[in-house]
Amino acid sequence: FRGFIGACIDIHDRKLAEDALMQSEQKLRELSEAQKRFVADAAHELRTPLTSIQGNLDLFVRFPHIPEDEKKEILSDVQREATRLGRLVNDMLQLARGDAGATLRMDTIHLDQVVLDVWRDLERVSPNHTMQLLQVDEVEMLGDPDRLRQLVLILVENALKYTPRGGAVNLEFRKLGELAELRVSDTGIGIGPEDLPRVFERFYRADRSRHRSEDPGGTGLGLPIAKWIVEGHGGEIHLESEMGVGTTAVVRLPIRFTDEG
Ligand code: ADP
Image 1 (tube, rainbow, N blue to C red):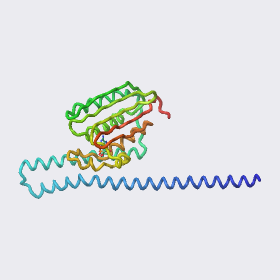
Image 2: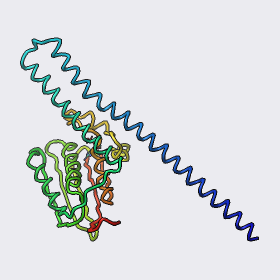
Image 3: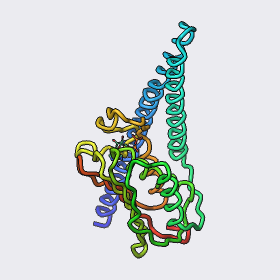
């Protein structure tokens, strides 16, 4: 009988090992698919501004006597597209470093100060929106100050970008026990239910955002970077949204004082 039980355990163990192997093979396949997709999407995104720059420079070479005002227009087009290229490359590099296992720098910071700094900088350059700070609690915790600054910047800039002139952007930063909660809400164009589950995918941009006449040319990498920063701090991020009503980005970070757990 003991022999029989032993054989059963043996079969059971082997089955477990086979399952684990299959799961890790599946994971590897998925990772390799994701990498391939990232490279293909990146090439596609880089080609668009590059083609525009090449086209404009060709014009210059072929027609050296273009009127001054047209020259200016062409040059400012080239400048805009070059800026976009730079932004894309920076964002891609950051995500690639994250994929390669780059870690966050952990300092003791006053997160409320980081939030306030970003808010004030953006307030100065956003005359077309009503910006209101609803609440800012003091929070001291361990975190990467540069990355958290970038996180707040991505969320507030998105709120401004996707809210037409005259709309409102509000921010609340609360200490809820062991959690710091940041809410950035806007009265903007909103995100449809078909797009909402996909906005954290790399390069994903809702069609409505892409085709807005005043589209400032996002990279579709802001939210994936935001997610990487939040998860690197052991937190969670999600968006709540209603088309034509507005969007709220919610971030919850554990307030930690040591690197463990
Ligand atoms: P982007 O550079 O395009 O802003 P993100 O990764 O930051 O890239 O956002 C992905 C997409 O999510 C945006 O293109 C837009 O469609 C949608 N989105 C993000 N934030 C908002 C918001 N506050 N209001 C409406 N749509 C938003």
